[in-house]
Image (cartoon, rainbow, N blue to C red):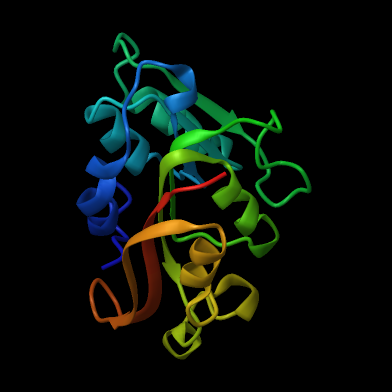
Length: 188
């Protein structure tokens, strides 16, 4: 289910977070993209990952910053950036990650780029609304709803090993159509 409680991590993220490789190297950070108040960033920090948390909402990032233990040994970098601007995905063109987490967010012009930003062996955990959700309310704009099998087709096109994929209707916490994937990048 998609967790709408902004303090609890998504069940999907919790289920697959252990698949994300760990290393002390900076390049093995996890990107929490469109992180909101950072429920996944905090969870991944608790698992021992270094994090880059990005969102356009400065207030959300400030809440995240005040909610974490600033004395902890693992680094977390917060970037306030408009995620829907051209070339905003990352400051450095070749910045790669051990894991990328995206929930409840879709901006299709940057979707492929996110898959490209994973290291070989890196894990994509993505969960958001899909076509059919318009009958339940927002989001209802097709620009913000995944097309049928869209995440699966992208991952297969980039030679990812699919650990899990679901496209389904959920009833809790409210009725919605969702699509989610956990996949490992196997080739450059």
